[in-house]
Image (tube, rainbow, N blue to C red; front, side, top):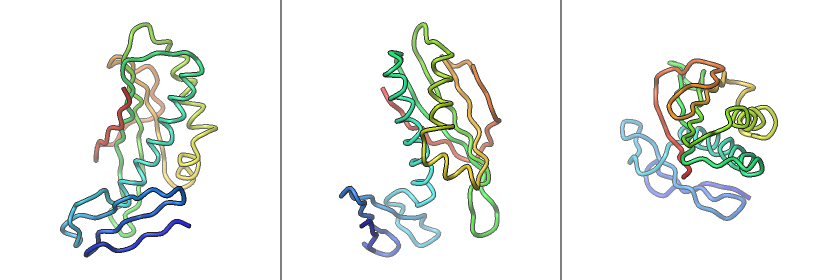
Length: 156
């Protein structure tokens, strides 16, 4: 059974069903120590991690080799409490030689439309848009990023 327990102040330690520990904290102005990711940051990491794992797995099956793969996000949040995400934009950034754009698109779309359970859950309540770039050039854009924060999740 998953649970969290206080460490000090608002700093927490989460324990997952799989036996892993996850530190959780918040900003100093909210009473935290800024010693770990906030719950909302962890939500974004869960989304990017879920879809990135799908894409990596699908591209491996397709025998697509790349030099770099990163997922970046930008977001917008409501001004009033609860300050939920109202928009999330994911950019799938690939670098490599002779990358098949259609295979990259297929992997991303399979993740977002079929496999990523975090995306499936979140898209019920927040607008999620996507973009795919290859060697710095946009090859597919199904939404426009909103500037708030950028958090890269990189796989080499």
